[in-house]
Image 1 (cartoon, rainbow, N blue to C red):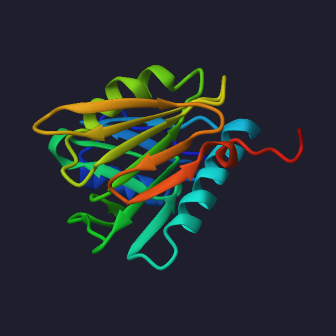
Image 2 (cartoon, rainbow, N blue to C red):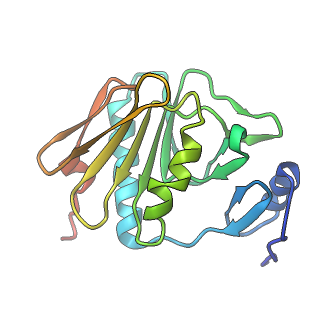
Length: 188
C-alpha cells in the first residue's frame, strides 16, 4: 500500500505516518521525503561494516543496529536511518517514539553518488548535535577508503583517512576494524 507523503508534519505526526508506511522516510523540521533504495555495492559494504563491528564488539555492552532503526537528533528536529550505528550502555529512545534511538556512539554511512554531499555536509552537521556521538565513519564506494571523524574538544572534529592494508581505529569503542575486511568481496 503506497502512501502520499504529506507536505508538512509535526514529529509526532511523522512517527504515526511512518508506522503505516511501506517505505522509510527521512524527516527534517516537518519536511518528509522517501529514501531511495541502495545498490548491491552499498548493501555489501553496509553488511560488512555490521559484521566487523559486531565481531569486534563481542562481549562488550554495545549493540550494532541496522538501517531499519531510526536515529533522531532532537536539537535540530532531524531523523535519519544510518547505514549502521552502535549504541553502548543504556539504549535511549525518543520520548515520542520507542523505536527511535537518540544515543548512538558511532554512526557509519556508506557514501553513494546521491547521498555523499549530504553525508559529508548537512547530515553530518545534524549528527554533530548528538552528544553521545564520538565517531562518524564514511565508507567510500569509489575506492577502498574509510574516513573517521572523531569528536575532539568543544565542537571540533578530527578527520583521519585510511586505505588498503590499514586498521581503522574507533577510539570511542576501543576497537580497530580491518579496512580490507570491510571491502572484502568473495564474488570479485
